[in-house]
Length: 259
Image (tube, rainbow, N blue to C red; front, side, top):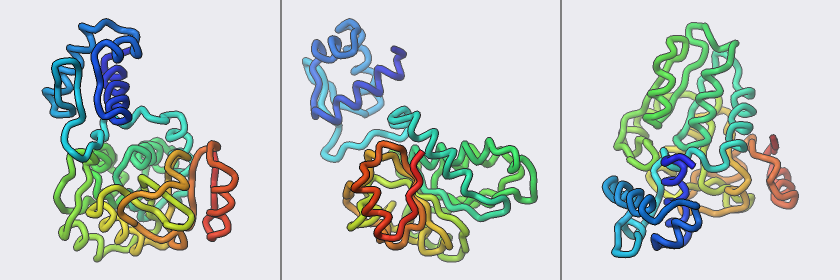
């Protein structure tokens, strides 16, 4: 297990339990207590947790892992989902991408498509995600439109009135949403109201809305609503989706694609 993998596992355990002790963590990861102590010290230096005498506790009241520590979760499923979403996009489209691990993979899948290797532009990508813009801006065949706004360190997303002002002036063909929850009755949602507000406007400016989410986020509610289920045209997810939940989305008028 690499150091990055250890850190991701430790942070996942911390999210689940609220606190960690050195000895049980060392046993769970199959490494020495000295290694765990060193890892916890380094994570504390990054303000990702608070060290205690015997281990660590979560940092702050509200705990959310930064994007860089969430990228390996359900990686195989996200890879399949991102390829399927990218295949829905036609050359020349204006594509809106929200922030998140799955939408970041969608951006990479679009960048890898041979039929999008040239054009003027091959795609126009509108995003409020700094990391997505940073990855795609080096591709001259893509026109990148980055909204203004205030950056959230955990998700690299720009939010607030500046982002909303830019989006309000644009027309988008396909909006691809990353979500924290998508429930057939309650709609698509995220944990943060500022992100939800920007994502909602992106949906309103799009002709087609695609939700890209692994099955662990489906049939799940989150704090801040992005849009109603009726506003979503296509859901792309993995084959772990429960048949009952899939049926509820279909009954609500959403095209469900499982990969």
